[in-house]
Length: 283
Image (cartoon, rainbow, N blue to C red; front, side):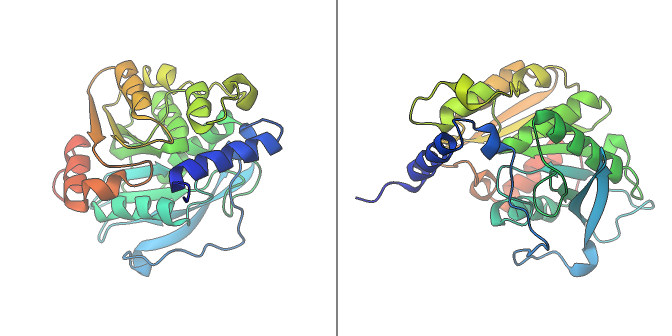
């Protein structure tokens, strides 16, 4: 019988890790480099979507700035800085769809590639470079008309939960932190990603202590996770929620896996949840 897709993916990751010298770091911190972005089909008009560049510790990073009609200094909107998962680059279907749904929910969106991913230069070496790239994305967003720190939401999916949490912890004035399909720490992530039982300390040298960092976040925290996620089990979302302080909400979506939380919730309900929790009001 054919192996289930999710189980096959996990086994493939374990095999790649073994061939890479039993180091998951080499897999986690590398993306698909491209010369140009071939975006999936999109509902966002060309006039509201532009490719942008900014610098992170000497490296040029690429992203897309997605604006709402009429958005600007005279009519400021809430802006989401989207830190994507280990999907290769921002133009991959799952990662672009995440940014697009956020735009459809009425937000301005900055989606960007970490160094070594997509068109971005350099190499993502560890969690510190991911955090630096998220900080650079915030610095760029704050140069745009109508964008202030109090109107910025830090949103991280999967791997992106690490830089998103780091960004919110380092910038107390940020509006909201949203984590989707996030992990509690590097050890837990490595253990859930490898069905061969290889000791986690052999796989990933980075602590990636999301639970410790999220405790320092003063902004409201929304955590969404699929109940059927086998890549990062829902128990890790519960750990993140328990560690978060202040205003917080945990949404466990029945039937959703690792990539499809937005889709399973549905655009109308997802849009209402995001706008209500971020206090963004009616679009």
